[in-house]
Length: 370
Image (cartoon, rainbow, N blue to C red; front, side, top):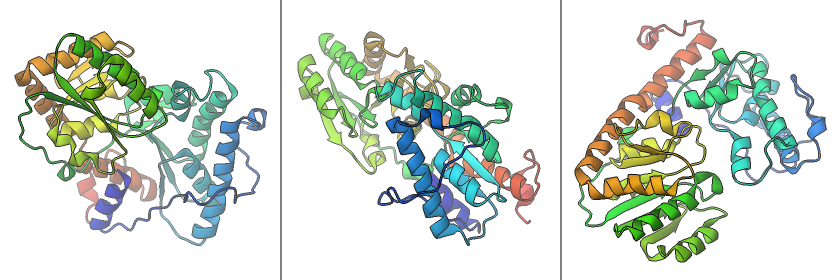
């Protein structure tokens, strides 16, 4: 989303620069790290913590090397380490931080760390540090704002700005598939519930409901999923694509988007699938439940429930008219609620309130001539 935001702001005359830490920069930073709100040293020795601290050091080193003499009115960070580094290097410049997801929950769901362990305690302590060090905290869903707020002194100050998309990128195509085409797009990791998806599709096979499942994405459990599909007897009905740079170019040819995630801060791919005019099936968790109203613009199912998932998919497979109505409703909501224009407007108000004293409630249009 960020490159499209930068491009849109440039078109209206705002100079913007994108800055990130290149992958080739490793172990360059040597500066000692201190946090304002907690002592990180009790967590030292844990691999996740050590990598986080070293990445922070590298980001500080790279920022000072490349940006120290630059003059900015405002910095908008989209990763906690970026926000922490920028606030150190540019202490007099407002920093907006958008927290897009929970690193600790992802690591726990993917079996990388244990709940309640040192790594989770360290990573959740970062939220309060961000609250202390940035001018404004935003996130992408009310669900994640509630989660993050448990670790803050002033959770009421979190702003929710859902992701936005340029609908010109998405081009629905009229088609009539004889067999229902199901698709999922994600990184192949345990947190996405893809084992539940395969079990749900196996249940469809038992019910003699024909389908083809398209799995777009790659990740550490791909081989495990392929083996599972073979054991469940649905390998011939499943296509593993691997990583794809622009899946939105292929999505319009499918019928149903399905992703039974175990957790999701927002679930960007649901909005993208909706803009491609696909019917949506998701789990009743996090930001997914804010995008889908069950039976109104898609179907929600409980997590960890392959039978309920199969029931929802079967509903769409056997009732193309209902499927189309849900897809239309999902598309209409995505265009209205998750438009890039809306995001630009909200960000513009945010930026001006921090740099020019504009009240956040003031209309963007009132500032166009200033």
